[in-house]
Image (cartoon, rainbow, N blue to C red; front, side, top):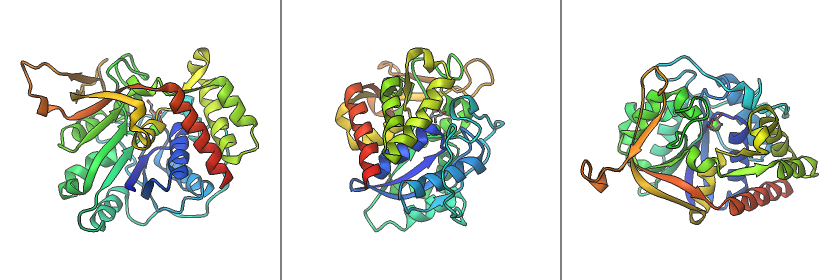
Length: 314
Ligand code: BDR
Ligand code: CA
């Protein structure tokens, strides 16, 4: 069983990711959830994380993370995720408060409390602000981190600008810091997450089902589908579910080691990932991330949908 800490900004696809993780508690020991400003402000995403955890029957601590990127102004994504962050869905209020400790202190403590010889994997599906500060301020935690599997970046064009993916665009400095801290990384960028979609018909079926988890996820994804240009594609990417799916089923993905960095300028390349491998300039061991590039779309869909139904039947 793998220990995981989930850092997220729910967020429609973050919310579906949490459901997928909640459905697989036999494989994933969820030590806690931290939130970060991203799709919506920190107050909204933290409330969403608390309410979602309760709705999914996940009794794990939720800690509130950074409310601003390292250097930039906050940049939200209301068109994809709605004003609340979870489309038009209204969840029962969990009545719970976040942990008294802030996100990075919470993660540091949880990692520190792991028994000798045990590590945890960090799943990050929002801007990398918390993780950047964590690694910079408490570098001693690195030995407790098995790997960081994150959704963010792209080597094949962006979704906010031509060059940049949302999480990297929102906080390019944080992404830069995390890429250069020497921790094992798996990047689930748009290159792979745009292959990991649900079709309009599949979403419609989820919405019409009597299963409470399937219905919630269908309603949220339906909001994203209808309110973005994905409407014309007829399918919506479930970006943030990819890191969790990769941990559960690495065999359905392909990728390769790369040397990555991020453009931190304030121009048209802000947040763009530069990634290559010029053998005459670098050694193979200089690679700083394993980059996923291909997914078995049908398997992804099948496992995700089955997991949502299973969680709803518990
Ligand atoms: C990423 O941006 C956010 O809007 C999503 O939640 C996902 O993490 C996709 O680019
Ligand atoms: Ca996200």
